[in-house]
Every structure is written in C-alpha cells, then in structure tokens.
Image (cartoon, rainbow, N blue to C red; front, side):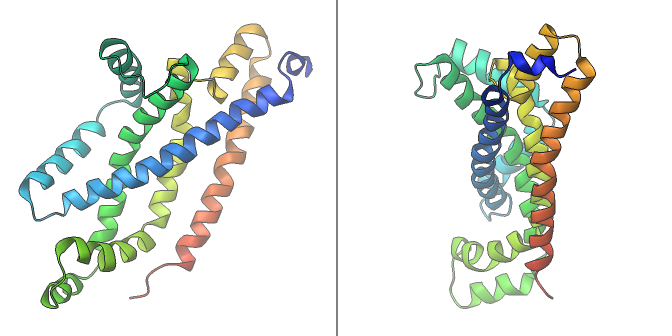
Length: 224
C-alpha cells in the first residue's frame, strides 16, 4: 500500500516540506517588515505616503496570488531580466517566489497591524507629540509595541495562510511540498493516499503555529 514512497526516499519527502518551511519563514519575515512599513505609511501625516500605502494594499489584495507569482517569473525574470542575484534556475525561482509571497502577504500584514494601531488610545499619541516626540518616534516607541501585542492572533492567521499559500510557488517550478505531490500523483495511482500524506504534513506545520501564537496572544495581550 505504501510502495509509492519507495520512489521518493525520506530526504526527498522531507526536503519538499523543508522547502515549504523556508519559503514560509523567509517570506514571513519579509512580509512583516514590508507590512509594517506599509502600515506606517497608511497612518502617516504625509498625504503621498498615505496614498501609496492605501493604493498598494487595495490593489495587491485584489490580485490572485497565482497571478503575482507568475508575474515575478515571467514578467520580472523573463521580460525585465530580474534574477535576484542568482545564476542557478532553482535558486532564482526560490527567490522570485519569496518576492511574490512577500509582496502579496505584506498587504494583509499591513491591515492587521493597522487594526492594532487603531486600538491604541489617541491620547497617547497626543501626549507623545506634547513632549516633543516626532511621528516616527511616537510610532516606534509607543504605538507599534502596543499594536503588535494586540494583533498576534491576526498575524498568526496570516502566517498560517502564508504557509498554505506557498503551494502556489509550484507554478514556477519551486520544489516545495505541492510540487512534489503533483509529481507523485502523476507517477502513482494512489491519489487519496498521497493527498492524505501531504495534508497531514501541512496540518503538522500549521497547527502548532496556531496554538503557540494563540497562547502568546493571550499572554501578551494589552490590558486596558
């Protein structure tokens, strides 16, 4: 019943999920950084920055992730020659996939953080301005620390969605879990068993993430 695994030894199977983990971690960090900057732009007193942040989020959130990922490969790489500093095709695909995932996920991170910013009492920002703090100092020292603590739960949901969205990277040849599953299904007849194995793998990746970050959310919640 499990003979299909003999063609794909454990390192290959685990390697595919390891690629998924790498895509999730690197894209998650990139999305957190870019999403935080976008959130800062959306609450900025500078109209141009607010306009850019709002336009970016509204446009990117309404474009399918598959379109963004394929654009990074066919558009940036093939048309504009953007290789992300890689000479190897597989490395280039990995980096372009990260670029697409970051560009997409950051829009959702931005909205999660902005909702956290809105929970901080306005009086705290006014008090910061009264003692001479600039907008960036107020945001960095007072607003964002409280905002992050209040949105751990929503950010956990974004991270779980990102883990599942990494499967789209298979569209440009990145050998992550979904890519390997597709190859195994094409070569074997046991579709249900193969699907169950990979479904279980994603549950193993996402369930602990949700539990741990859910616990942190309750532990670090801002008491008002």
